[in-house]
Image 1 (cartoon, rainbow, N blue to C red):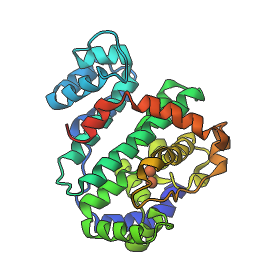
Image 2 (cartoon, rainbow, N blue to C red; image 1 turned 90 degrees about the horizontal axis):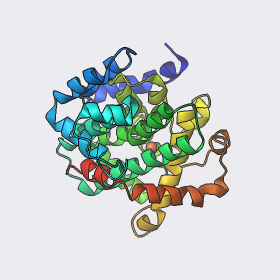
Image 3 (cartoon, rainbow, N blue to C red; image 1 turned 180 degrees about the vertical axis):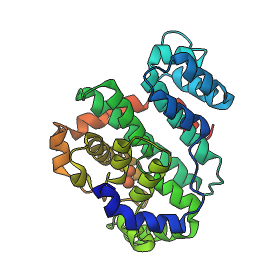
Image 4 (cartoon, rainbow, N blue to C red; image 1 turned 135 degrees about the vertical axis):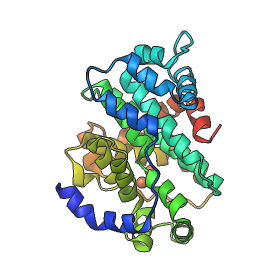
Amino acid sequence: MSEISVANEKKIKLIVNRIHNLPTPPTVFAQVNKVISNPNTSAYQIGAIIAEDPALSAKILKLTNSAFYGLSRTVTSVKQAIVILGLDVVKSLVLSASVFETFSKRNIIDKDFLDQFWRHSLLVAFMSRIISRTKNFPSFLEAEESFSAGLLHDIGKLVILTHLPDEFARIKSLREKNLEVATSAIEEEVLGFDHAAVGGYLCQKWNLPEHLTRSIQLHHTPQENLENITTQIIHVSDYLAWKSQETELSDSNYSLTIPLCEQSWSMLGLNIGQQEQLIQLLLTEYMKAETFIKMAQGD
Ligand SMILES: [Fe+2]
Ligand SMILES: [Fe+2]
């Protein structure tokens, strides 16, 4: 067992004891995840697996043809999407569509929370992809992994909302009364673990790559995971996403409690003085993301 899993063992046990029936990995996603790691898998095989789920296929095609990818012609099959966008992009689309599907089916009463949750998660996903691309980290694959990690980084909050609704309500009300205290600290107090631990655990259950799982587990404490560049990207993107939302949230109960880890910034070759410029890039990119937003909201 690795060092991290030992450190989290206690938390994970608590989660197992208290959260039953964690959302299962969407079947198609699990299958795609399995075969995609085989280098001999063809676009045809992946396309065939995805085609077994018509609703998911339709969502993937909708995202592929959205303004975000700016394709000059309409893509009509998942196989074609794989050929044009590449396997890694389609894999991240399968994950996005599957996650939206998994959580939209649940009867989530707090619609305002849900809207804000997806807006924030998508902002972090887009920011992460921008940073990965502009900094030219090892490969395009890294950019897609960053996007997925960004999208899922706070997924533990949705698990708490759907599986421990009473505790969720308590955390929310305590946070509103103590704006200077970070949500994670309140979760620790109420539950004994925070949303990052729950999210990491869910990703483990879904067999997502360890690198990605750890970036979610440690997005609030990136200094504990300096060898993992995705963790640093998610941490910085989380901060920038909240910063970009500051004006719109200024009327509501809101305060930015995410600590600024300067080490993360320097590891990415960025400095805090560039934040305005990065936020501008994010807002421009986000304008093209309407299809993602609508799908996240269940349309
Ligand atoms: Fe978080
Ligand atoms: Fe966040």
